[in-house]
Length: 136
Image (cartoon, rainbow, N blue to C red; front, side, top):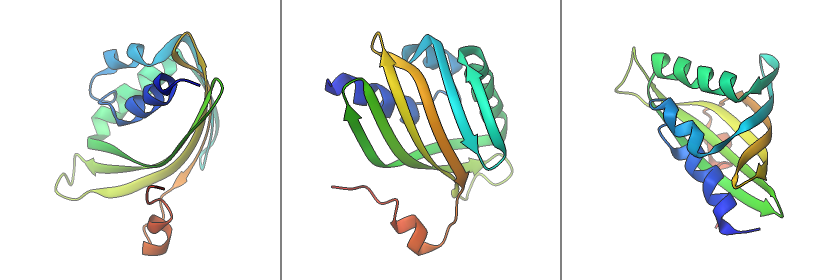
């Protein structure tokens, strides 16, 4: 797989998509789907629903930062493991880990097409956070 696919996934998660929803079109295929198992249950999101969710994020968070520990590729598939750290509107001076994620994306036409994502609320214990340190 080309480096471009890994870069697409990495740049999406580290972009300002939550502040600038127009950015999403640079990374997601127009027919994109995300199958997401979260601590709140299963969600199947299509392109527009992903865009709508990004608009909701900007209402809650002053900043959203992905701390990536793993970024792997295999043919037309990219896997990413990361923690989102946030600064809330109510407390912009303190950055806190929000949730841990693993996502597997199938690429189509150079964009993220079909995603399978698992997330859980962040455990901010040092041992847990250390497990998300980048792999060299």
